[in-house]
Image (cartoon, rainbow, N blue to C red):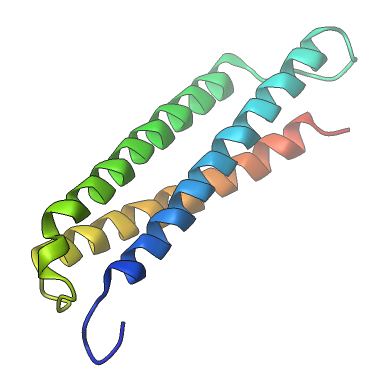
Length: 123
């Protein structure tokens, strides 16, 4: 943001970062599922219980929904392209900030859960 104006590149940067984070979280959850299958195959550790597996399912669904929302926001950029640069009170920026808040909250929750699951499945 320069001189109180928000440019397309400002928002595009965040979308790229968010998509990367969502992909990373989904990859980590797949790795956790694979580890759980290894354990279930008789490694002598306790595998995840049904509730923990349901939590993983829920996070995967939320992350995929977030991917869709980010994609929609990116597509809407084309509609608002003629308005840029815009001020922080522009409707598109308000929606972007709301999405940022949701992404930050989800990221914190997923990171904490992944950390817990890694401890659960480790030696």
